[in-house]
Image (tube, rainbow, N blue to C red):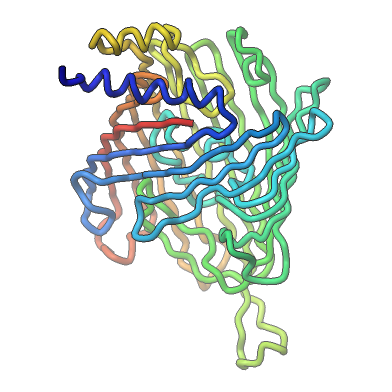
Amino acid sequence: MRPTPWLLLWGLASAPALADEAWLRPTLVGELDYRQHASDVEGFDGFTLARLRLGAEARPLPWLVARGVAEWAQEKPALIDAFVAVTVLRDVRLSLGFNKTPLFPSAHDEHLEARAIPELSGLAQSFWPRRDLGLEARWTPASLPLETWVRVGNGSRSPLGNDNQLPALDVRVDGRWGRSAGVLESPWGVRVGAGAHVESAYDRAGIGGIGPQGFVYYRPPPVSGTRTVTEAHARVDMGPVRVAAEAAAAWERRSRDTDGNPGTPREALPELKSQGASLEVSWVAWGRPRDDGPLWPQPKDDVSQSLQALREGQVPEGALEVAARVERLWLGRGAADVQSGGASSAALAVRWWTTSFLGVGVAGYLQRYDTAPLEEPDRRDSWLVLARTTVSFH
């Protein structure tokens, strides 16, 4: 008898259960999109393989984790994660390698495929330092409602090394209570915190305006010298509703070489200043509310009931989540010789988390640019409609 598609998915669902008994666990994240853009210059319309990440996580000892993941949905494979982490003194976790930097909970704390709105906010796209190669310490004291990260890295966003001789520093401190502190039975949760990223840049692009699909609508001039990015965030959970706010500000120094001699001082240029803020509200209409972990909302039924529904050829109830977001960016301010930019944006998404490993959804994005992109100097409005199917095993 030919197996039904749901039975095939049930076979895949059994894989994580088997992996839980082993110290080596595979990681797979696949996302297939159907997209419609406002303009061809912002991306291709139609079906697109948005993401295909393959890797493995090893836990040979309770206090030791090693993880390696590569992205294959590009022209060339790209390394995503490559680190080793050890837990010492129960409250301290040390990790060494290539991994996410700790700023911005919306970017750092959740798996990318588990977001209520599929794509990162424009705020995080532009200001988040992304991944880096370095050493990180995470402190979560059992006696205090705190979570702290300190990371020293290259600041180059490359797993191969630094682009100058100076390291980058990332610090983030959060207070957390209720569900955000791991009390799963709590009907509420609060997480409030702030972070900073400091590095030295050498003639690299400053903070630009980036759309939901990676289109750069505002290109800043090169920056050179000290770059400082600060962010503050607050998240409140009340039953099935989550409200999350993030804000950021950045200062980027500039200079230029006027004589062609790298040994002589460079001429200082006016500093660039950028700011932004976002507000996101999500509601789990049915299913279990989100907890503080990286996974998406889970069905109310336990895993065995969901698997039984698959065996019988039925569609699981899953979890349904609705989310909306508004944000505002001000970019490239404070320098008379630089054309400033920015955007006002909004997004709306509906996601059906069918099982613990399968999700489908649709999202819409609107943007109003302060200045038109270089590719289309007569257009300042943009939109994107995105339908996405996600398979995730961790």
